[in-house]
Length: 82
Image 1 (cartoon, one colour):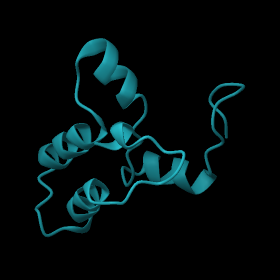
Image 2: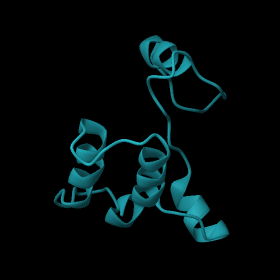
Image 3: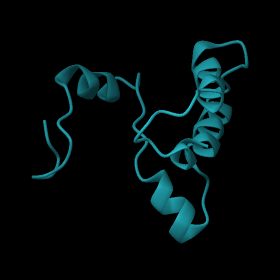
Image 4: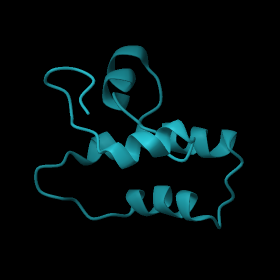
């Protein structure tokens, strides 16, 4: 499903998971950081994990921390992900 004509195509499984509260979509963290002085992707992810009381030993928090130590990927700006 596309929410806008040129937007990304979301799989039905993701939309169902969203409706059931099992997934959260992050979008536009770079714009928020540059224009509004808000948190970057990692900061936003940590804030959401904090709000949901996700402990440091849980997989979502481990994934957030792993992103910080991921080696650079050609074509992907590291600054977009912390």
